[in-house]
Amino acid sequence: MESSHVFCVTCNRDIYDKTVKFTTNTLEKNKSVLKIRKKHNLKFNDISLPEEVNENTGYLVKCYKNFLAVIKKYRENEPSTSSIYITIYITIFFMNLYILY
Image (cartoon, rainbow, N blue to C red; front, side, top):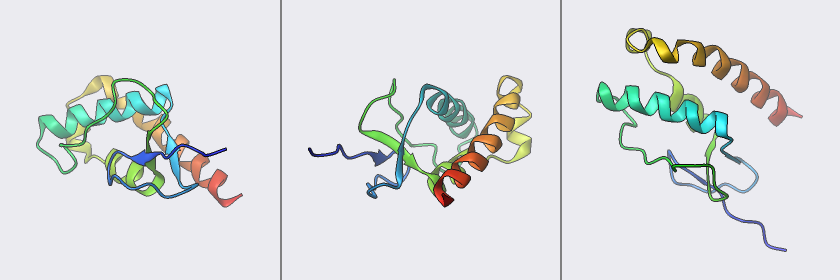
């Protein structure tokens, strides 16, 4: 049985067993951050995210961290996304633990 390839939306690479599929939660976080990046013309503002979770798009943990890292002054202008960052840090922490084991 052949496994499907999951491509990173940030770098467009498919690294076997390293690319993580989006969940509804992670995709929504990425969409919120992409809005900030587009609004302020920041790096990675040209990334194309899927409308909904699918089997072929995801992210590499390193790319995910880089994409979600937005300077505080830009986040403060977006009050609806402030609570997302706590969840992001917790998610990244547990993702790193999962990768280690």
